[in-house]
Image 1 (tube, rainbow, N blue to C red):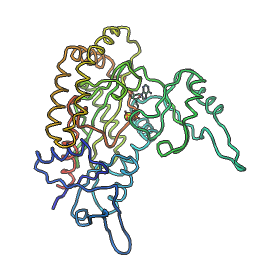
Image 2 (image 1 turned 180 degrees about the vertical axis):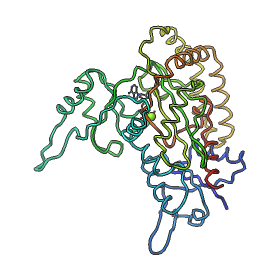
Image 3 (image 1 turned 90 degrees about the horizontal axis):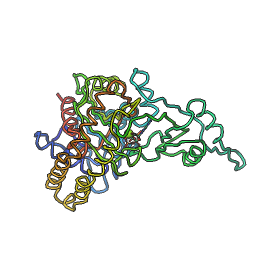
Image 4 (image 1 turned 180 degrees about the horizontal axis):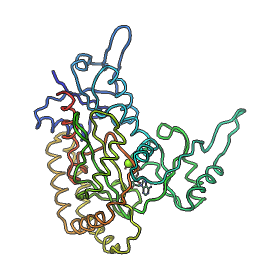
Length: 392
Ligand SMILES: Nc1ncnc2c1ncn2[C@@H]1O[C@H](COP(=O)(O)OP(=O)(O)OP(=O)(O)O)[C@@H](O)[C@H]1O
Ligand SMILES: [Mg+2]
């Protein structure tokens, strides 16, 4: 019998990684699928089964669920269902539902006095269906409303998006009008338009992990992962940007704890990844040309990382793949250009620590490679410790 189960819809690196960490921590972790299963409830009691297997007993035996479904909406259903049958869930439904919407995140930060970008939500859809097959085009009015807040550059975001998808930076009315054409109500943007001021973050942002065990305080990991580069204003690595580690100045850790509390409210236990950006009034004090050249030099060691990511052993021998990817990341982190860029990152972050703004909270962050190896934060271990705190 196992007390902790990992709920998943696709078992990927993070999920296999959590299993490896559980082995090291002597935790007997069970896996429960939450994709092609059926959850039955009502007059005949509760059942949980796939086509080939009945998991009802496993579910009944489980006390704590680590909810690692990839789909935000599936995670919301999972936490809702499981809490209703008296299971403790990490993250709880409350945290999942706040994290599902950027508007919701930003409101929570703002209410708690956490520094956050100026954001504007316009409830109207760009195009609206009218009777008699007519269509109302609100583009001009939406642009006028936006222009009452921002004059030129703005960022457009789908409320529930991830991986930078659908995030656009526009410089003028024409670009804005074109970008609005793609803002169509969907599962990641149910209604309206969300825009945000462009934060002068120079070339990087931060991924900060906060966590709270039952009976304890919210804590912030002392190191964070930086994503950065000049390839795209979105710092995602699939767009050609790279990753680094920084030590967090105390003021940022304190602000992160405030941000974590704003999202978790009264939740007993949680693990949250916060996205934050530095805010630079003036970067002319730093030598950007030099940094750009260093990024070009860093491509070679980083490409070795990218090549290893496609190593076929990932599928059939995850442990040896994990050792390989750790080695290449460590090589990359000990290369000269990495060390020099990291030094500038650390210094510039120390300089602007009080100006950092928080723009998002993520309930199910990817962690096995970048956050764990480069960022220095083992989210899997935090998840398991948090789950254990709910059993004691
Ligand atoms: N207001 C802003 N000003 C400048 N850059 C921004 C702003 N908002 C977001 N970005 C950049 O765009 C990228 C994606 O932002 P955000 O976290 O809001 O979207 P996401 O879809 O949740 O992406 P991810 O899953 O990578 O976190 C980040 O790299 C961030 O630095
Ligand atoms: Mg984000």
